[in-house]
Amino acid sequence: MAHALFQKGRTTNSPLPLPKTKAGEASHNQAFNEVRDSRRNVEINLGKACNNRCVFCIDGMPKREDRSYMDWDELKAELEFWYRSGSRSVGFLGGEPSTYPRIVDAVAHARDLGYTRIALASNITKLRLTHFTDRLLEAGLSRITVSMHGHTAELEDRITRVPRVYEKKVAALRHLVMRQREGHLKDGLSVNPVLNGWNHRHLIHMMRFFYEDIGVNDIRVNFMRPEGYAEGDPELTPRYSEVMPTLIKAVVLMEKHWTKQTFTFGGIPLCVLPKALRSSDTLLKRYLGEYRDLSTDCSVRQDGDGFGIEQIDGGRSRFNWQDRKRFDLKDAPRACGTCDMVHLCEGVWRAYMDIHGESEFRPLKAAR
Ligand code: SF4
Image (cartoon, rainbow, N blue to C red; front, side, top):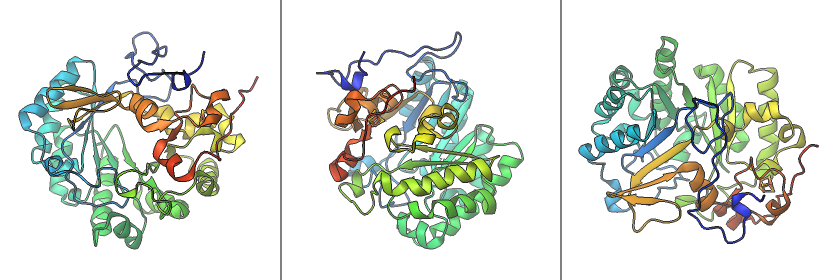
């Protein structure tokens, strides 16, 4: 049967068939595998105000109302709603969630409700205030994913468009690494650079910097999605084929040198990967970020009447992130129609194909 993406006349809100899960595992739309955390996750957007201005930000042009923060009572109700729905993992998103006035209370409330994995997706500029970071950790924060996209002041300050932000982030990161070594952040500390036209050639230097100079043990790179500020920008949006030599070098170095650290990538279709990588289950499990991503719902302030799969309720727009990507944000190039990997591959960012077309994509044959 054809993948839902390729069925003629599919509608954006037709549900995906649920993959099989092991007995006792949370049943949702991400299939069980031994490297994926089976907790169901919700990401709550607290408002789109941010203290960085990254050149590729998809929220880059927030409306006035987007800059306001989520009401505290509304946030408590949303946390309770998702907990009742079965989520045991919650992430706070922005904009920049660390600037939310009651972020420490939000983390503590999530812990008190019973969430066991409480995460922040942060540019960590504010976390240079180590007493603030420690309050978050004491309130129960168990994971931080760090938005940092360069290994030098020149690169990081240029990408974020904030002078001297690099030194603040480095100070924050060193403190987080120290706290993690003391036993905090049991669900991880991960640096998440967005791979873009300005930094992809520096990837190996970035890895060396984060692994060896700073002591982080997890890096997840996500290929950029050219929307917001970067919509239609070919300089910021490299072709997959341009990025591939450095990405392959990164994988080789992981296999031979950084064997104790974790490196994953996301947002890259399988057919642009070299055969040795895409045809190895072992390597795919190790490096394909989507293989590990938790089944994730999102809750964002309602914007207009909503689009695609999102459901509007009480001023919030709610959708599943994996479905959002498949149905609303990615598309299937013609090659996908005869590809055997559609069950594993989410397709290609629509906005990428608007810039570079679909000449790079080839249907793959499954190994028999
Ligand atoms: S042809 Fe389509 S489904 Fe197959 S790997 Fe490429 S993008 Fe993914």
